[in-house]
Length: 277
Ligand SMILES: [Cu+2]
Image 1 (cartoon, rainbow, N blue to C red):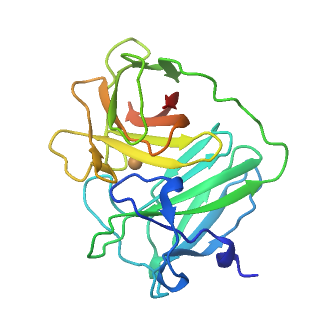
Image 2: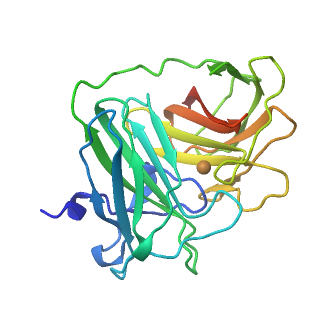
Image 3: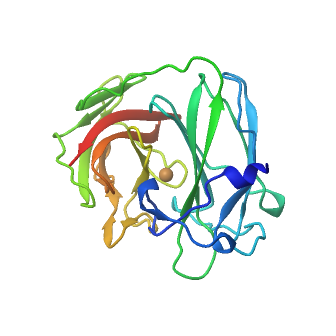
């Protein structure tokens, strides 16, 4: 059986930066974007392995032209999450000859991982971006780390991410999380743009692994708004060390936010558990 035939070939209704696995619809087989030549699907834990694929257009030809520019809504975003939400990998691989996309990935532990390919094609028409999904595995005993309940603070490599207040989140309603981020010495953390944004807020729902993604951009940067149906949200960094993160989640449940930013030359990933009513 051809590997491409078992991959998810779904196109999302949702426009903009984010979207979710739960709001997808399938269109006729001849009219979908699809992962092609996606390999391998089995990895050895701890071993760097080249993952590659192409995105086939509805015409059957590989997609070779992707959006470019300064904001985060460009190219291809490769996001890999372990099924217990204990590990996140986020890369923006280059698009090679004939639309081939390759990235060396190391799955740190055994387990099942969901792969999200979030693509920003350079096409005319209403479609801004879409997601394609696959699963990869590393054989062995997978750790099962419970994501735990809500905590206001996450400390990563000595950097402290502190939510100002406990968020009250509702599905399909835009909300904001305001955080203070401080260095190990207590001074405000200066954010360096990384992958086109000051911060990336990547959300996965526990269990179903539904996906959504928003960004925090510097003042004046365009192309940073996330859209879910008719609702929009744009995050801002209001002052040094402070992030205002837009949250816009499609369904209730327990979600894990991976908040990523670059400070002092290192990429930090702060996990938060959020309950959405
Ligand atoms: Cu991002």
